[in-house]
Amino acid sequence: MVKFLPFGFKKAQQASYDEWDPPEYGAADASSYDYAPALAAIGANGQPQQQQPHPLQAPYQQNAQQGQGDPYSSHPGGEGWLTIREVRKSYKKRLVVRSVSIDVRRGESVGLLGPNGAGKTTVFYMITGLVPADNGTITIDGLDVTRLPMYRRARLGIGYLPQEASIFRGLSVEKNIMAVLEIVEPSAKKRREKLESLLEEFRITHLRKSPSIALSGGERRRCEIARALASGPSFMLLDEPFAGIDPIAVGDIQELVRHLTERGIGVLITDHNVRETLSLIDRAYIIYDGQVLTQGKPEEIIANDDVRRVYLGDMFG
Image (cartoon, rainbow, N blue to C red; front, top):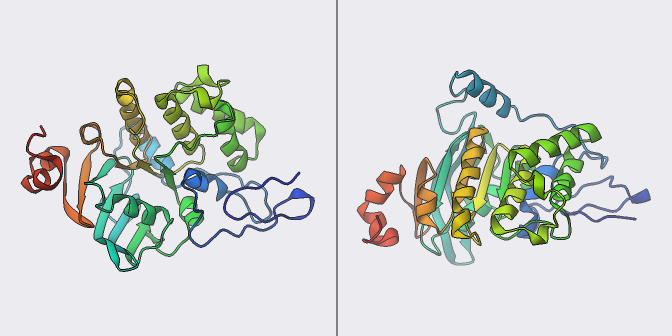
């Protein structure tokens, strides 16, 4: 039986996939974004390739354990950085993103905040490769990926967790994670070891046999993040991670984000829950009218008069 997968897999003889012909800018379905790193690991012959640790991940974790500090460049645009420079996007005659520049370092969490219609989501889409930037550059570890399709950016370490529920509702928790591991890890033994590690790491071992459709909002997010990490991303883009989460589970999601940075993963977050987001990020960019109004640490953002005028309001504190 032939199984159809995202990103334009072509049917070949004996239900194998000898060709992979992804669209220039990835799939149109937001629910499949976070599978791009996993799908990128399939070779041209349709067989899973041996997944190697990202070259940036091992030194970060090793040095952190030994207390040796950050091994990456302190210069934005170099190794260990996701860098966006003066990107611009228009839809017909409507200019949505005027000129936005952002830097995200491995091991830090950065917020991309602003009012509705400011251009935050479009910036996210340009970073992932869902839509092309009209102008500007996007680099990962110093490599220019501005014109690369989505699946190639995923190979370089970009992970994306969309706002919409992307879990396979008809599968159990462990089968959701295994669905990615079966693509990126050819060894059955290593797949099982990685599965057990992720289940334990995200404290969802007791839910492994539970149908995903029965999970709470916080449990679903844990499963989605664990599944996204199965492909070993270096940078993770989180679109509205607090959406659909009960207030009691907000702290749980914040803990998950902190856990990602402790892993050496750079996290870029956009969310309308400003207080929750500012309480966990290292820095923030405020987008207004398609451009960066200001940037800085959370306390600097809160104290900025322009940010209060156009976004936070005078009563925010």
